[in-house]
Length: 345
Image (cartoon, rainbow, N blue to C red):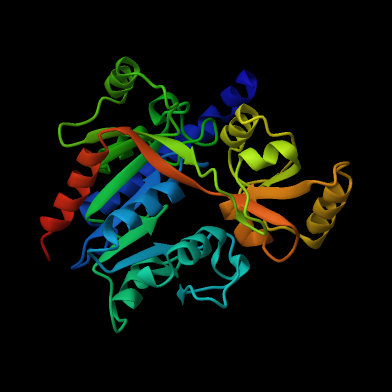
């Protein structure tokens, strides 16, 4: 591994130069960036892989939806359609992507969910709606410099901080650590619930935030009430044989959670945002049929449920949310004040 990283190091340096020049051109106005007359909050990360963007977007939706007309705009990763689409009941994950469909199904008419790889065009299209949004949440758009967001929220995983990482392809960073300075808020995600204040302070010192930046710590909370084919709780799974199907970046926290709850399961692991083929579906069905117990179910994540619903049965999913270890009220206040103090162009 060390030898491979050494061999890839020159490519990482080249990648660094390219991304730095690109950011520099945007900062100088040589490359065009569009700002809008409504607040635009961009949520993202410096690294590739799952940092908990979807739970963070959902947290913001819950925080804002009762007082603002909210739109969530995503590129719709791995979707088969093109251009601007407003997510509706007729769409599948193949049409709009699993995460946008998840947002839509969870919040329905409380928000507008749209997809467009061109975020500038996507926001422009949203603003032409009969009831245009008052706030736009950009999902996974930290590097989308063609839109100048009014606020940036940077996510970094507790066990994989961006300050410990290096640029692609040697490491996992999409751009230099310098890019962190665009954020007003840094959220350390997927922390252990027992993370002490002393360790939190140590991490803050390591991140070395700017004077205008605030650092928060969140953990992933699993809903113990399952949804899907049956009304079950996590405790009910102790009496069943479970086929766990995941297509997420890092299933380890879920595996640990189920093991802590004494759930016996067989795990079928697929890549993140995996588009399940017919052969995959057949393999899942065969694996389910091979389970010895008569009391058995297929369990998946909420995101994977968007791509598996109607294809395998009986299918249940476990949902997650982002919980602040402390400082949640300060986070809410920072977001709400940024909207209150927003100045139109």
